[in-house]
Structure formats: C-alpha cells, structure tokens
Length: 212
Image (cartoon, rainbow, N blue to C red; front, side, top):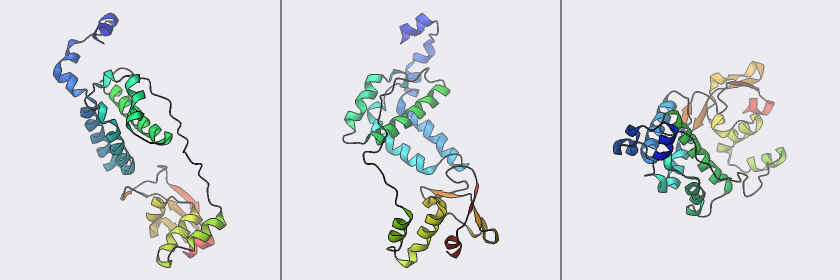
C-alpha cells in the first residue's frame, strides 16, 4: 500500500503512524458511524429499526473489527459467509449492503479511497412468499380475539404497514371526506414523525375502515 502511494505520488507518512492506523480500524470507525446514526434518529432522519439491524450485522463482522478499513480485501469478504453458518442469501446481502454503506461513509470521511470488491449474493428469499387474497385475509382476521381485531381490520382496509397503523391519531382522520393522512410510524417501538416512505400521504378510507 505504501509503495502504491509512493508510486502514485500520494504518500503521506502521517496516515501511517500507529495512532492514525488505530483510528482507521473498522471497530473504531463503526462506533463513530453509529454515533452519527443515533444523532440522525433524534432529528427523524434515520430509522431506529435500521439501527437495530446494523448493530446485529456488526456481530457478523467481528473478524474485521481490528482491520484497517483500507486493507479489507475481496478475499476476506468472500470468506465471511463461511463464518456465518447457515444464512440465507437475502440475509448475507443485507449484511454486505450495511458494510458497503459503512465503507462509503469511511470514504466520505477520508479514511479510505475506494471500496473493495464485494461478493455476489442472491437476495431472493429462500422460499417464495405468497400474499393472501382479500377473502383469506378476512378469514384469518376473524380468528383474532375481538379486543385485538380492529387494528388488523383497519390495516387490511387501508394497506398501512403495521407501524403506521399503530401510529394513527384522531387528528389524522378526515371522516367527512372519507380519508386520512399517513404521517407517522413506529420504528423499533419509537414513534417517528414521518412514515416509512418519508412523505406524508392522504389515502381514502373504505366504509369498513370508517366503521372501525
């Protein structure tokens, strides 16, 4: 690496001091990256549930914790899934996507120049998911105890995500015009002042949704 920088005329000895190398270890920089994400959550610019996932993915990257981010190689990345045991291609894709976001942040902060080459991952779920049709939804909703049923009926009728359905307030409803505004959601049990799509959206209400 040093020879490459000398050849390219970009060698800076300050970058290779012991203290500077320690600052560029993945574990050290990851802490700084996550600290920025925590601050972003406070202003509603980042999702608590995504942060929770990032903290989980970090445990899958323990073998790189002491590695200088500039020295992460394609070979090391290719070997990572072997250490994760039986994991789906989608889960591996999520971990690598998180790592890629982190390394792009490290590039923006000037800690490294380019991304290493990442392995290919099949992000398709192992089992094909099949959505229930409306009648199937209603059959299973009717199996839910009465005291819990309304929110599932409302979510089914409005196509809201469950976090958005839980965050609906009285002031969000415009019943005379048979509509409501989606403007909040829950993420990792925290109420966020924006929906997952980040844009407030007026949606129509069916007769059954209005009844609920």
